[in-house]
Length: 351
Image (cartoon, rainbow, N blue to C red):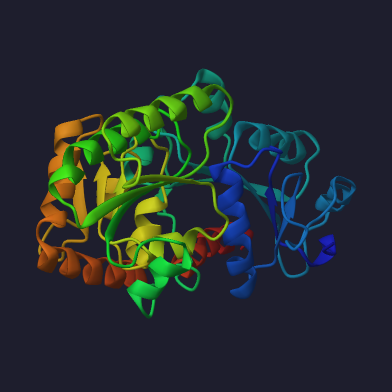
């Protein structure tokens, strides 16, 4: 438990279930602390290893921390913006409110009302920024390059997760559901693998509740195609960086995405990406002279299959894109860069 008197930034998390927002907080806060930002979390659903404050500590927000004009309240949901507005405007507590938006759709009237009352707004991508009707700063998410890194030996990386080291693997990671495009990945592999005996496919992720029948249908589709031994459903794993390191190609087939870290995670492990044009994917992947992957239209099965085939059938291109992706993430998408950019906004407001 952190001492509120030493805390300059509060990162609330008012949702118990794990989500992309919660994952962002979990990954970002330790890096922010390492960079000297005096930040603590507030709310349920977070690891006890993170520095935290209690709700009763909020009574101290009438007095700013030593050497500062105010504290920062960094909200990422409507439910976290509203109490901050009450604390600042009704109770006159010494806080400034930062809001990070990852939404790529028109905001509701209620959301617009809240966002207009923020002291600073961060957009996680250029597409997100286009839906905001207030001044904002685009700060793309970063990746933990210490956690996600290439293997020393690719064959050993495959063996470590139980894959055949004599084969090349293309993977699709994330929740198994239609929104995530898992069916598009499976159908593209059903089309591609029969003519490419050196390649196999991996689906890593979990289906929940109403999506269980969807997963069963996909497995039946694979079995009917005679590819049950080459399109593998390996379930959910906590050691997901190890699975990335075992891949030779990654496909992000989402029909919709708020931001989407999987292409960065793949590129950071030296794996080229074929991704749909959703979320921030087109801002993460380079298709020019320093190609790291291919961006295809969302919900376009043929384009996805063609993009994957372009790499599967051209191993020099695959290797070049792998090296480019590793260099791009190290240079432009390390999570420390994201934390520093956010820290600059904090500093501006606290001065």
